[in-house]
Length: 145
View 1 (cartoon, rainbow, N blue to C red):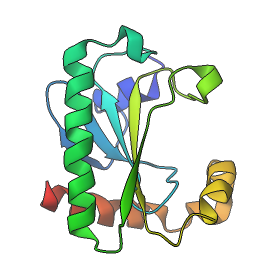
View 2 (tube, helix red, strand yellow):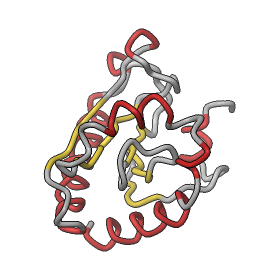
View 3 (cartoon, helix red, strand yellow):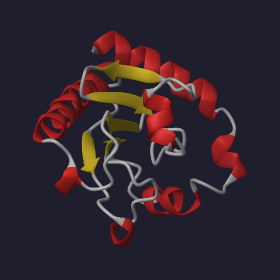
């Protein structure tokens, strides 16, 4: 299977998994828009929310809400959270597998968000220390969940 999220769900590719159940898996994003950015993956491979079983969509939102609360409990500098689903290529969906972004917001990061969005896949400075930061976030969030 060539879908990276299916490979993560099948544990063929390592990830910093912070939560999973029968319907979804939550991982720390390898290309975060802000520190602690998490992606909730559906367990079923579907490219669109319209095609996803209702039970999985409900489970994904439930997990995202729990993760949001865990983010705020793990780091009191997290002020708010963005919940984001890009549904289809015209909506900037890069991986055709339904996933929900849970992006912590700190209050000071508004100006940096567009820059990180535009450079997160290509900026080598963004990659340095990411693995260590991801592991730390995974541990903090897993403890809170």
